[in-house]
Image (cartoon, rainbow, N blue to C red):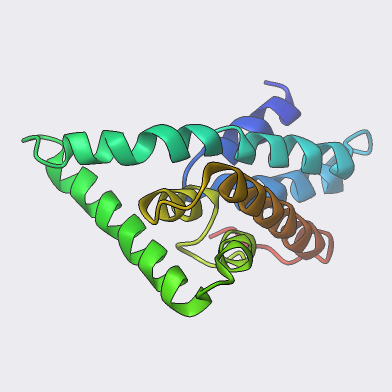
Length: 159
């Protein structure tokens, strides 16, 4: 499979997102002289951003619908509650600076943060669509810069 396509697909996966894909890209760059970290960065940002509008529009509705279902209810409730906690925590800390707080929440690469959780939290908080997309985009770009720098410095986040 094409390395860039794999990075794109990995960037769309919750939890791993761009953060994991960029570290993989740094490994590719170290072993393949024809591999471009710049193109990998662009591909990873696009891959991480592709699900964001769908997360904002549909995920909350899907989770609320499935929360009372027998097989999926516990998982859906857990994800919904996690998104709600993240959103409320973000709102408490941010006040009027919710846009910047969301951008930093998505952009600082620590466990439990990222475009998926941040966008779900923004949806639960009823943050407007456009600011959510722009904050998530800024956060994904920031996370990509941080992870690219870490990857180029040889910092490995593999288990």
